[in-house]
Image 1 (cartoon, rainbow, N blue to C red):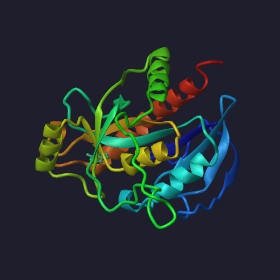
Image 2: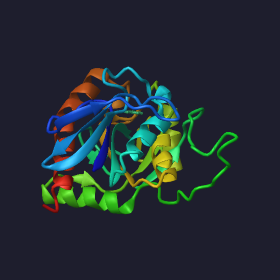
Image 3: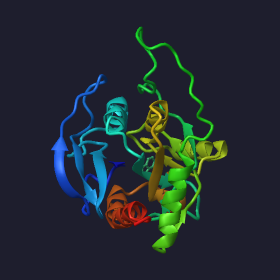
Length: 247
Ligand code: HPA
């Protein structure tokens, strides 16, 4: 079974033949929404809407530990996380898809480990390569197979949100080495790693980051929504292609 976390613009998967929805509880509380089980092209899938079914949870209030725990309990072959990003690079335009390979974490105050508290001794986890290489490769190969252009590497900066960045912050994030900026990639990726679940991301460029491209004077939220509506069909196509690539 493949687990999919849908972000802004992807609260459900049109091609998913839903068989059941299940509300689950975890030792860390409740996930953002019920888990939706079903099939895409005869392959089992479990889907979770990161911000809740009504998109009511801001990035800093998502219960990432409960989300990843609940999906890990399904013993998935991996988690594919879909998330909108702003682009810092001029060659990554709104509507483009990116399979990031690295992360810089600027978030704070989020529960970012399962190994804390009296019953769980500290554990340090290798995170040199934050995404699962084989899952990334499958996504890139599936994109090639259906003629979809994706950028096969990028450094993802995770910011706290829910506000967008200032132009100066984007300049700093670029100097740090990031290509795209989003608000939810951490602690998702490290929590999946702690539980030993393969994790990769599909980032959808929703806009140029603050102060870049056509966002020099500000970022249009209406434009973001329009871009996401259009790009999600491609995301669905990519996931379907990946799932059915070895049929
Ligand atoms: N910054 C952070 N997160 C985002 C952006 C952005 O510009 N666009 C979509 N998610």
